[in-house]
Amino acid sequence: MAPTTGPLVTRADIARRTAVRRPAVSNWQRRYADFPEAVSRSDEDVELFPEAEVQTWLDRRMIPANARRAGEGAGATYGDRFRRKDATEGFVAAVRALAGDPRHFGDHIPHDHYLLFLMALVHVRQLRPEVWRGCADRPGDVVGAVRHVLWEDGAYRLADLLGRSLDRCPPHLVGELVAALGTAAPTGASAPEAEAGAEAFDLLLAAYGDVAGGTAGELPTPPSVARAVAGMLMAGPPFDDGPPVRLHDPYCRAGEMLAASVDAVRASAPVPPSLSVSGAGTQAVPCELAGMNLAQRHQPADLRTERGADTGSRFDRVLTNPPFNARLTRGSGHVAPHWSYGEPPAHNANYDWLQSVVHSLSERGRACVVMPTNAASSAHSGERRIRRGMIEDGAVEALVALPPQLFPATAVAVSVWILKRPTGSCRDVFFLDATGLGSMASRTRRVLATEDTDLLVRITGSREERKGLSRVVGIDEIRAHGHSLSATAYLTTLATEPSREATGGQVRALAGRLAELGDRARDVDRHIEALFKEYGL
Image (cartoon, rainbow, N blue to C red; front, side, top):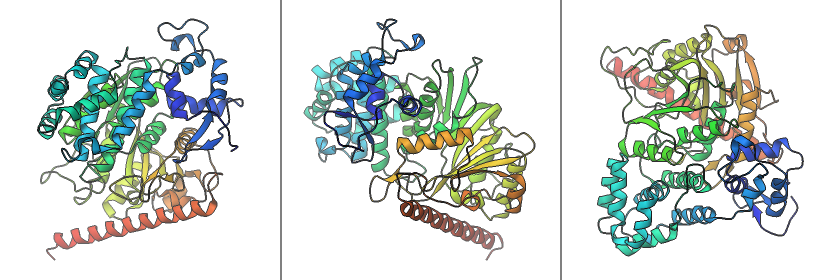
């Protein structure tokens, strides 16, 4: 990449300033040979483009009639939007700076509570402009005003938590936060300010996941993982103009997977289908954050703080990141209606989640479920029997092995199970070994860049076969492997991107394989321990 002079912009900058979704910018880059070339990469390994060249290119791209906003005439171009440098860029930049510097509140409140308060302020600023304008003039009333809005919007636990945490915080510090976020109010759901609100909430939620206490099962899904899973889920056949698409997450955490799916659906077509969104959580505050997260996207949602009994509900798209390897909670003698393929072991609920998701799919339903990689080849007899039943019934469409170290609280390698409504038989399963993708954002954390996500979505959607990366495996070969669904068992893992050094990709792949084998060993140990207890040993 050649050096250049002048301002540079990222894909995210282009998307925000043209009021399109980030996948649309990636699509422009792929489809049009004259799209400006990246000239360098940032410290976070993100491609940078010359602002002037991007402006010239966008000046030649007319905005379709069905995508124009109020005040945009027939000759409007994306360059017209890009040229406007409004307050939204300053707002997102301010949120990013505040998120990375909790010293504004010193020792008054914990870091995770500070980030929760920032999310609450963004919520009020974006969705209650009349309240927000009053906050700038009365710093002493800000906490009370924020709590009132949260109560009105159903975030009761968060309102109480922040009320207690901020009780002794000096009003002038709160006033400084309000001033830093600015007083500009959004002008509507389709305005750039509304897009900036969703982006700001996402980055605060990611920062919260890095510092909040709790287990991996309680923390938000990292943004790069949520975007990748949502993109793969929506990579199938497009929806028609029929009834709303029913989107569901049975373990919705803070709504990051649902929000990413809403973004992916809206970016999928000039006139995206309407959505009916629902989710279930186990804790009140994350579930309330999920509602606020979706509200930034002006997406109504039915969110509940319990994993309810089977109600017969069926969904067109389901995605979830449930807790890994958790104990199965059920009463003695209980048999769940979704256990079509067998009863999962009491010590591990992974195959309870998988069967529950399959059971909830509509006739046109597809699902993505994040699972620890060891679940795909578990040696437990009950899990192996369930897995065989799911495969033979045609419920498994694909398995995508992701890299390790994607989650803040665990280095366990994960795989995405792409499921569908069972057809009664199986011809093949698509495997993608993406363990060599991503780059280290810190010493312990890996992230998937936009290029990685685009590659995953493109290959998964097309079922493209690439040597060492992806292939379609027939049912006879899967049977010969004992119905194992480990991607690495069917693929020789090599470096997956031309820009990555082969040795680096191979080392990461071996690290992922090592983590997988460690998980399998622990799974066997738990099974043996359960047998000892069963026989009173």
